[in-house]
Length: 250
Image (cartoon, rainbow, N blue to C red; front, side, top):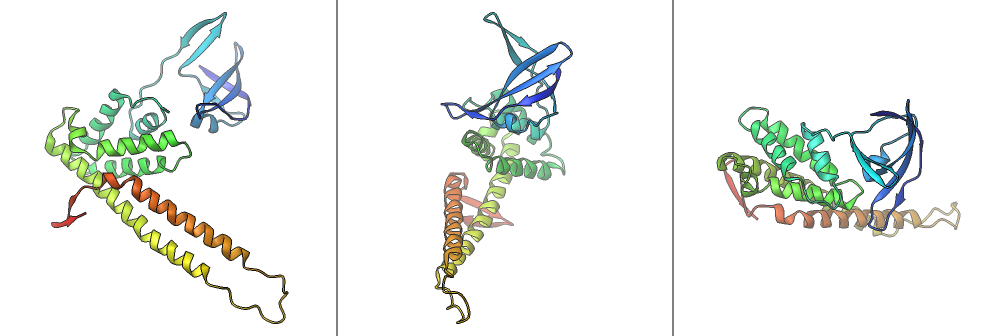
């Protein structure tokens, strides 16, 4: 059912941490109010055309489901659906579809591109504002980094190990970037702690070093975020990794 968005209310946070937004929509049959939750509510703007795939229609205390949800098939839609389920458990069927999608291309030259795209999308989901989405992304990354977890979908062990190793390698490369940025931000923080040069005699005596203090605080805050980010993914790093035939122990 396609409807036209007439009016969208402001998001309201519930007691359980979710955000709900009331949207007034209309089609040729009439006008109704819809409740849109969390991330999807932030994407709605006035004059948008909405397509209702699944909902609950209430009338005289009766509920009726209208429409059927479309099953995601491509990689972005699968990750979007799996990571935006809130506090619900991961859908086993969709998680199996995700594994099969990554493994189905593992025998071709496009396997690296598909795995890198999945890894990139997961790290983008980790930067989203809702904690449930970040936790879901970490859970999926942990599953895809384990050969045993991938092999649960009747996938050959050699193929599961190849896919899991690629995810671990990409995660380590991402952590190396964070490990490089962390000392740089710490150095910036230490430089900003140095006393500012004395002002020239012609300058006003009211000048202060408050901008430097603000920048130092922001730099130190970013450095702490890097440390927390590395700590959150520390259990995903394998103990032994081989890069270009060389063994690296962590």
